[in-house]
Each structure stands twice: as C-alpha cells, then as structure tokens.
Image 1 (spheres, rainbow, N blue to C red):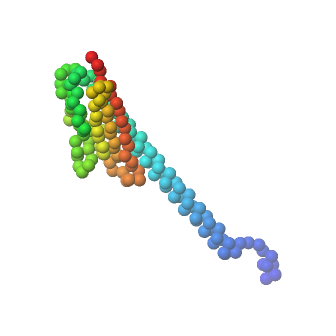
Image 2: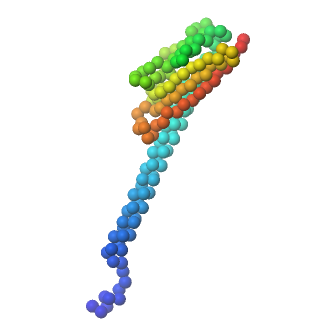
Image 3: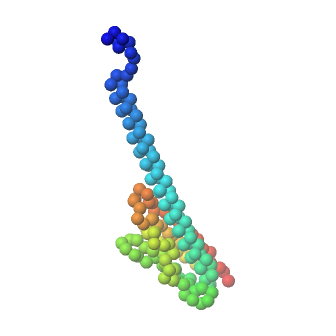
Length: 161
C-alpha cells in the first residue's frame, strides 16, 4: 500500500466540476448556434419578401408608365387606368381572409401564393402627376420568429403628354 500513496490524479469531485463546466459551455454554444440559424432564416425570409414586393411594384410601374394621360383613377386600395391599347387595367388589393390581402392586376396575382399582403395603399398626386404605392407583406407558413412584415414604397411619375 505504500506505493499507492504517491500516485497523483483527479478526485471524483474535480472530475464532476469539470464535466459540469463543459456541459454548461455546450448548452450555451448550442443555444447561440440555434439563435444564429433562426436569425439567418429570418433574414433570408425578409430578402425574399422584399424581392417579391419590389417585383410587383416594378410590374405595376411598367403598366402605369404606359397609361394614357388623364385616365388614372386611384382609390386607397385600387388603381384603374387605360393602357395604350385603350384597355382598362385594374390593380387592387382585395381582402382574402381576415386582414390578409393579395395584390392583383387584371385578375393575376402579382405576389404569388407564399405572401400575405398585410397593408396596401395607393395615393395620387394630381399636381405632381405621380402615384405612390405602399405595400407591406409577410411570408406564409413560417413562425413569427422567422417572419417580419416588410414594407416597400414606390413612386411612379406619370407621363405628361
């Protein structure tokens, strides 16, 4: 037994303390990675929503720029105008369910099926001859942590001839 008294090592208490510290660090690092992944999904979702809204505004803008002078009628959630072929073009935001809307131009959905339009507003300045389009949307089918309402505003100057 004399030979065993000089052997160095760690006691059980020391091993438990070190194991507890490493377990705590693993939990902290794991939660940081989880929040980072959620933030990445939220950012990716916001980029997609913004791109779809900007694409919808660009399509409306192309059609509005071709509108015949004096034919633009703007309501708070709709625009009606005549294009170069004397055809009526209608852009509106009808309510789909609850307070969710969709953006429609001549019966065609401009934003696709994965967006809820949460706010839609059109305004017209007759003196300066421009239409302001305000859209806010969020992604369907994701948690509130991963989705925020993204808003986009566009101003379309109408032609003067």
